[in-house]
Image 1: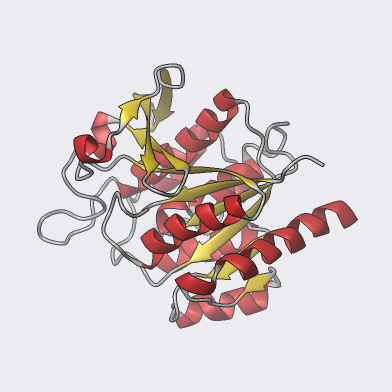
Image 2: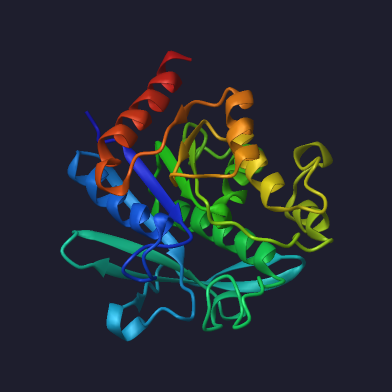
Length: 273
């Protein structure tokens, strides 16, 4: 029997970024899931504050060279890779000078969220999916961690739904207490339309805020995991009302087994249907 494949997409992974609920879990899970017998790939943005020399990042020439159009502008896609010491896993990095050169992650020196986080999220999600296609690696589970990955389930369900590479993949979204406090660009809907989304695909995403973005991700995913001990109450209610399969919070040190079983449950539903 072929190994099941899990694609991890995270806005943070240690040791490349400081510890957090997202970064710690996105580091712990791939190793544990791989050791449990599944095949994995892991992706994150190559934020400019990541020390490439210390972590020995290097460009993967055969995967780089594509261009992604975001809001009618061409953006070169660069792929880098590094190993996680003592974990026997590799992490792929989505890079681009326009979006990820700045020496910060999601906020500026004053703690203000970047105005282009919407486009950075679009580029990151699409960059991962296009790179996975170029790798020729077909996932059974796609597990997204954090709000910067929340658009990826929407892309998969609405724009990549007929792509044979992702047609059978199940999407799991982990919700954390990391949030943002300002609405995305007022032209965000138009940017999504330019990408090919229909009006009905993105209804309700105008003047998008943190709760709206995550409610969308909850409702288009095949499973939701509570990644932090405490999460937004309105989003917790949304999970219950959505009927989406849900896995409660497990601490980082004990999350691998229940998450692995949750994957099997989600994949099992695919077989039964």
